[in-house]
Image 1 (spheres, helix red, strand yellow):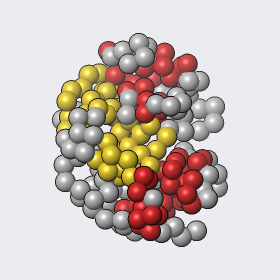
Image 2 (cartoon, helix red, strand yellow):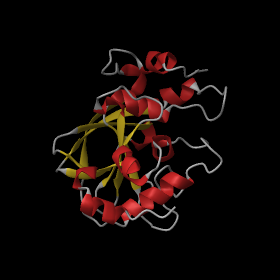
Image 3 (cartoon, helix red, strand yellow):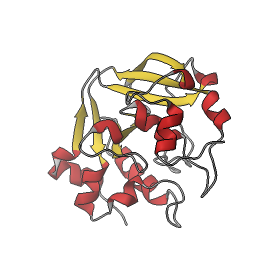
Image 4 (spheres, helix red, strand yellow):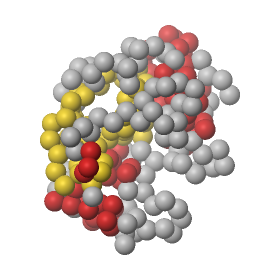
Length: 209
């Protein structure tokens, strides 16, 4: 299915969501990379990567709760997440340095006949894996450098009516978008919901060992 995203944006400008300068983001990542949390992944095997375009993608959560939920997902059915992985992780706070123009993927799905699950699916959900999300991301990347990235609902943590359960996938080569503010070892930090990362994951049904 070929989707002309640019044509959709021209006739439906509300699909572009302006994320204001100063908006806070969170990112959980290996502590060995604490010096620079702004990692634009150029590998095409990420959820919104492209095999055809050499554009890196930086994945951020609009809350620490969704950032942690996204990163620590079991590698397979009934497979626990290694506790050691949490021990080796830091929780970073970042902030938007300017207004960011993000394509609202759930709204885009509504306008194209796609189902929400098709645009936010996790790897392995369906035989095609990430192929549908990558194809859609590529079409969004081709809309031009004034599109900073994507806004999408988490498939694993999505409280209703709030950005707490949303993520951003920022495209590289758009100038500076966010800057680091602070970071702490993940297991020494309480999340914004008052829980530890371990408790938060356990409450979401994630098994740790």
